[in-house]
Amino acid sequence: MESVIGSGIDIRAGPVFVRGSGDRPAETLVHNELRYRKPRIRNNWLTAFIGEVKRRVVKEGGVTSQRSFLVVVCSAAGESDGAVHGYRFDPDADRFRRQASTPLENPSFVAVHPDRRSLYAVERVDGGVLAAFEFDDRTGALGALNRKPSRGTGPCYVDVDPDGRVVTLANYQGGTVAAYPIEADGRLSDTCTVLEHEGSSVDSNRQREPHPHAARFGPENRFVYVPDLGTDCIESYRCASSDVISGTGCDEPPILEATANGVSIHEGAGPRHLDFHPDGRFAYVVNELDSTVTVLERQSTTGELEPVHSVSTLPPAFDDDNTAADIHVHPTGRWVYATNRGHDSIAVFETDSSGNLLRPMDHVSARGRTPRTFTLAPNGEYLFVANQHGENVVAYRIDADSGSLSAVASVTVQKPVCVEALKLR
Image (cartoon, rainbow, N blue to C red; front, side, top):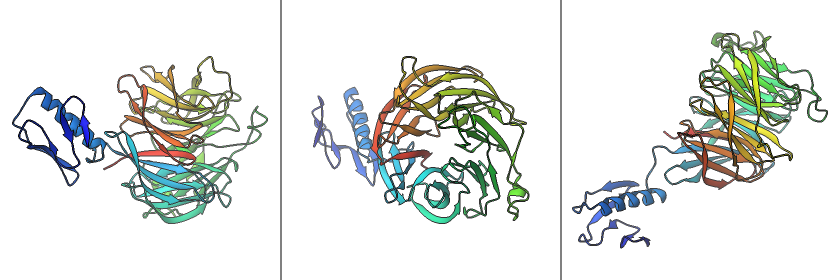
């Protein structure tokens, strides 16, 4: 039995009784719902108490929040312990609950189909694998559909176009980008396009050869952008129309075609991931090697990118080793977030009214080592970060007025390397 301090009222496992009112039930928990009987006493203290009861019952898991999220976490714990986990995150209770786990040998990234009926994961096994799964969007449980070779070693990123037609992936060690059509049941068709990158840059340890690190669809779904850490370039590929994608040919015509609109980032930057402003006019790329974010103006008709300026992800006084990792733009376009591995923080930036300038606002502890990836809840209310060597996933509440972050919950996960969040229906 738990007491509400100063109220002289007990919260019991069954109905809640109010002393001094004839022990009539004020609230009763029935079939995981709160049914409220209006009490005869309408004092202000009683109204406040009932609100506290509701909050506490919800926090104990008695009520299903309409704002709950399914958080999908990719755990690259090793050959025998890797998995994709599904966690329910309830904002009213500020806690995670694991719903499902599907063993995978060495997954590194996942993407959910827009219809939420299938999920795609890249695995660093057998020279590189792309796997398709049936997906339960209530629990995160997976059922195998089929597997295809990634067409390059070290697959590190996967994306699905907003229309659900194509899966793209980047192979870090192999220096290639691949695109697969998606069949009606979510299965992967044969590889239709494999593109090989060429070049190098100034860092003799990390940039002796190409290392594509993402393959992200742009806002209009006509272009795919590939930051290449090894060449200090962002390559741009034009995506084929739906009738081409639905064809049966394997190589003619291709799903992705190179354009002349690739762009160079400053030497030694090491572009890794990118995201877009909601209006599509600007892209933001996080550069791993020199811990910066570069703002790029984007032409929607051609897909061309033009660098505007760059800003550090680190506080001025920090001079230790660091590599930047992930980046996302808030749905309002007002804030940009990026992670630091070494400083182990989330950098918070404010955009100007147009989106083309970033102003550093804050550096918030990741509450774990090596924040490799993170994601924003679809409504922009929460941020979830996966701390690869901190063995945890941390939830932050995003202030709607300032964009500032407040940590509210954490869950232990073995070597989390990717995280996605869906609003539960």
